[in-house]
Image (cartoon, rainbow, N blue to C red; front, top):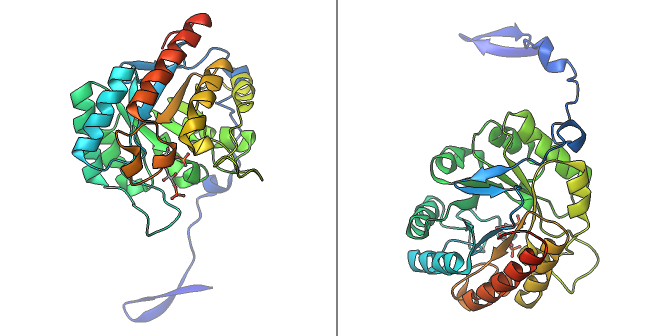
Length: 296
Ligand SMILES: O=C[C@H](O)[C@H](O)COP(=O)(O)O
Ligand SMILES: C=C(OP(=O)(O)O)C(=O)O
């Protein structure tokens, strides 16, 4: 029996259990194509993801300084990127690695966004930062490491901000779709899925880009699907081929890392494109998109 001391005397306590909390809920499958045949279009500022255009999200892995952020955002804009990316809160393997600038990073993203007219997406790691991101960011990213942080998913599910949900290192298609379901079930219908490579036995690339998941997801869900070739391959020279492959397999866009000086980047410089490489990739993607009857 549970007991508590009230006014110095020990008293028996029985927890009050809400019977509703124990009732099973009928599964809804809000993500499923069979229940929602038409493609969902997610709006981020003026940008539509899932409406036929190939949307390019680009920017540095992490926000590092005003100069770095504005210079890189300008390169993204000039190359034809539609949405800016940048991490202010960084999920790092080592606690000694750069952890991000936190709220100051959001301020710099806001400055870079204003300077270029680009909306931005940034990662949410801790629910206590959600109000700040809701106030400042255009899209909230849930990263690979938090894909099954169900309480965080429930919270962004109650938000009105669009969510970019990245597949985890070991996430199956069913698990990815169920994580999306948590957000949809909360009432937030603006969810974009992102394939970013999964962990396999192969070490030649950072992760193994599972491009076959794009047609699989397109069949099973109405939600837009994008690909992050940067985190998948981990090396800049492999990024462009996989970005083009993402377009070829029917993804709704890509998220690619670009840094004005990748050699000096505080995180993931090896997989970040130089501005000139980004511009070249964009020119190639535009040519390919035109052949597929799509726009960028
Ligand atoms: O942007 C991404 C992550 O924070 C980064 O890829 C993690 O890399 P790490 O495993 O070197 O910390
Ligand atoms: C941390 C990131 O990626 P992932 O969650 O896919 O590792 C990122 O895009 O900044």
